[in-house]
Image (cartoon, rainbow, N blue to C red; front, top):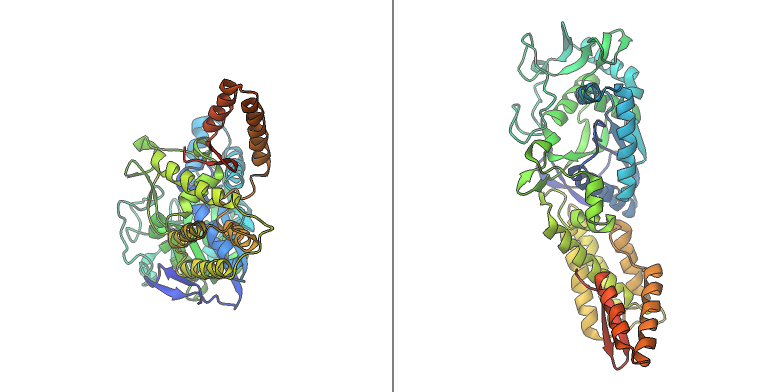
Length: 456
């Protein structure tokens, strides 16, 4: 079964066929580095980390590029508030962002491209738009003329701003030819970073940074573009207009993928709403595996509610898989029925992922397998462990080894056995209670003491 993806451009699932067979050029809009990244970013970038992992798993040669917006109105405003240089501010929060991605194990990006390293590419693309009659000049810079691009709106199906759009950087000027025209190059203002170019002294607009970067990295056309759903309009519409108008080649991107938003208390997360949570704060509430499971157990196109209940469910689900992994006996020769169960599970697991990366369906298959395997009374063996490792190679959400903690727990249980043998039951109970505080349940049976991670 070929991989099928929902394409925002066509509004349907399509077989994934990159422009060059077996080779995928993939771009995802990166952060504007003026503050700590939040858990909405974590959700989006974890989903696209999974996309890249899965395409590689399916045999594609993937190059995943992400931009770093380090020249922007938001950076300039925040830097002024803090009394630091914009470049100093952006460098500081770029480093923090990369640390956050490493902490979440979002490791699939091959190249991070900073806007300030592509000023010549940006100027060249704006100049191409001017030469082709798609841009005009006002007293505060150069603008894209939407009346020259009839396809504007083909991604979103509209041309006007709505409530959920990312609209903080709409460019206003009374002299614009069309209400939606956007800045390509902003003329120099006192105290702002600027470059001396044939366009005049100034700096790039927001939208042009991404297309100039992707043209420099991939050329005027590539395979897959991702981002959060609130970027569809106007940002991604602007990208299409810029690149296709500048190059004359259609389409800019063959497949557009958009991740659903993360909500807190039923509302889109925002500092103004008082429900803002940084990635660093989230990692104090749960470890990276629990966060990854929480994100990836939801379909990438779905919105997601983030709260304590979400984390508790993710933690409990993780532990079900990890407890099953602890039962693996690598020396066990699995029965034909067990091997058939593993093979069938693997086939259904990948069928779900081939269907627009249906991660909720895929994990449901894993849990069904665990239930069926446990019912047999046969311990899982090497084939089961291989499948678990294959699953975790994609999700990176399960601690399958427990090597350090297992040894530590077994040592504690050995001490408890010694205390019970010496009839020092109160001290033995303290060990049991301490293990419970660590999320570990123990059970004394005729065959010895069993233990597992509980859902707390």
